[in-house]
Image 1 (cartoon, rainbow, N blue to C red):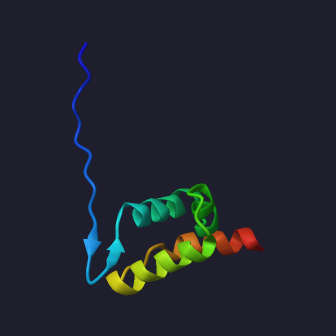
Image 2 (image 1 turned 90 degrees about the horizontal axis):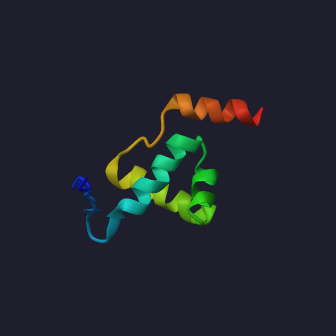
Length: 80
């Protein structure tokens, strides 16, 4: 049986420089999945400092709230 063809697209938002691309999306998806920016960065072999910079750029440039208060509460509960 022939393999089905599927569409896979990538979106990159750009202003004057690099703004938001597949790497930032992957990082934020990892945060949603793992509940931690640190763990998402580690899975991507990215330093926490770089991950924080990517997050802050997305947040400030796109006026995004990248994770909900509920996920922040889960993280705070885990640290207690």
